[in-house]
Length: 273
Length: 325
Image (cartoon, rainbow over all chains, first blue to last red; front, side, top):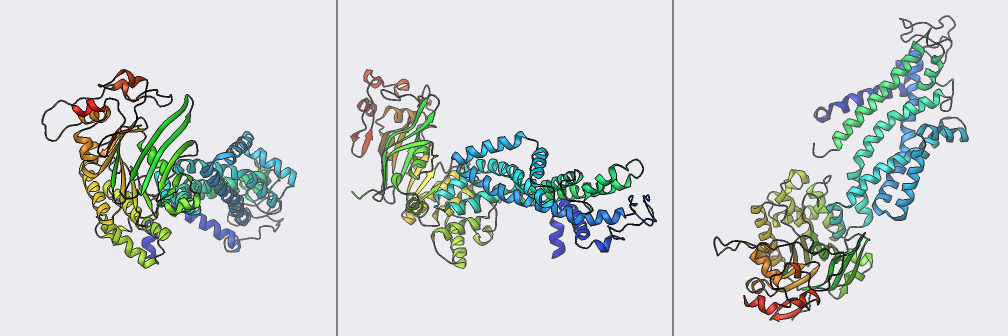
């Protein structure tokens, strides 16, 4: 039974889910994967290249890169989820209402979008974090404050198309209430691109979190975060490439995982498949 | 004479456009009695669909609507939103031209029928399921229990239209507004759906307003017909009389442009020209530029909508001459 259900799922979804599950395992139980304590210094093994004792090598304090990369999965997955859930929820609700009812709220929303997209996303987020102070919590606030606009814009454009559809008119002439029409008939039909965008946005959020970590605005050292790890390795890149490269691989892997799941979910949500 | 179920009086719908207001519906009046099937015919842009949508207040807020649409003594156009919702679906149901577009693609047929039942009925889950199967049977879809689990895209065009009819019938409405229900279907299916609608109307005692551009459809199904042109009703009466002896030059021209079943190999006479633009006021009769019976006063004075025969009305100065040919 279980096997048959899995067999019918799209292949990209399975591949992506496998990657994410592996990362989730790293995040939930780093001890089972990582051979060393990610924060333990080892002065007997400074800047070791990848080898048998240290699969991914060590940094200038003798910390095991594999252990640090694995330990960082927890923070990065947390970033992927926490930095996107807020924008997803706020954006979906705003986009749904603004798209369906239009009017003054829609006009105000349109100008707000103009205002936000005028600035590069990263610049705006950095500005907000700079005001609030560095740290993960403030980073979430900043990303949510800016990011919801993109979800709302996507949702709105879907809803604009849907509200003119005959089945929405049909709901009205059937005497259905507005909540029923919005939640049961408009939302499920508009949700697909938003969910797919959400999946890719999780990958982007990791990159963003890593960029901010790299700039020292996100996760603070000595906490292991992929962007922070890369930042740590940048000065030593010519002597010890492994310090920056392996966390970089981890970011790429997570990005591929989320993108594949996004593709798969898009396939799943397409009823006509 | 019984009191009409629906009485539309002097309905006007305008849309603001760059060149001025487009008068899509310009003083339409008609009535529908209980159990009666009334046809609303006209070419594209004659305002027939807009009329229908105005009655159930489906038009965008940009449309200005005036006049009355009296439903069992209450004016639908002045009803508060809440009361209107109680009428929609429960008393007046609507079906649309495109059956695919009228069904929600992410819900199964069963979910959509049962939702309609749940919104109006108050049946419990099992009773709803049973009733949904029953409704599918009523509209001619066999093995309904399995069909309930299908999605709209798994149905053929004809079956989709049957499904939308089943959804519309769920609340047992007294009036069904059908907006070109067969236009998107192929001919054999058209005929089946029309037969289904007439049968349902007779069996359930449900009145119907059938909007179509197809005179053949009207002849087959309706008791009375309103011919529309340029947003007005130009002629109304029993289908037999109107078709046998039209009193409006437009109706006559429309009938001559159609193949007649009896007379073989007669050349068809097309109506020259195009319908008038509706964004400027038309002083006389809107059909005058295309009319073969045109008189001087047709250009300056709008003909009154007056009784030309028992139960037959027409808005034509040349009604006598048209009727004589």
